[in-house]
Image 1 (cartoon, rainbow, N blue to C red):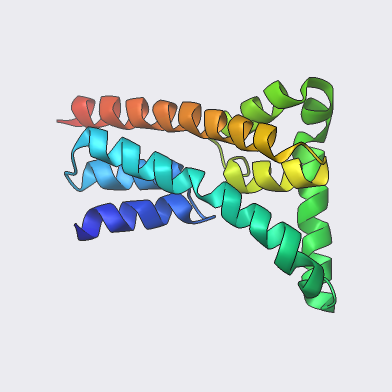
Image 2: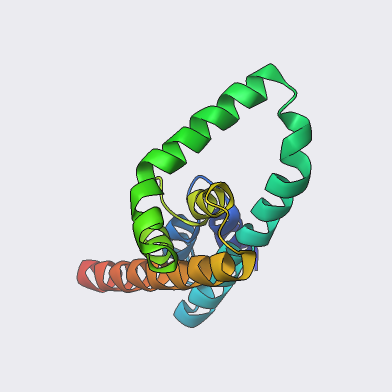
Length: 151
């Protein structure tokens, strides 16, 4: 039980998301289907939490100089990393950006990009969820293949 909770916490964390949670859970012997479902669901929960933060808490924190400088830095990184693809391809560009299983992409960056580019919340949630699902599948299959090759 503790290992599945840790895997889910990794999947919520901005330091790994499901990209870390799934391999963690599999390496600790948790049922492969349970790991996928739990880590995927945990990672999806980031989107509503991020949008709540961006819409309600962010505006108050922007009054703090340190936070404002950090927020501007993150916004520029999100726009530079994803801006052209999301502007050009919209919904599909956002899916592609979120699905890439590499550092700097994922639901945190996807949520920020959705907010910055004013993508309708329902469409943004769907695009982020599809992207997370594909990314989670890639990580899950890769982790399973690696574990089987090593045993």
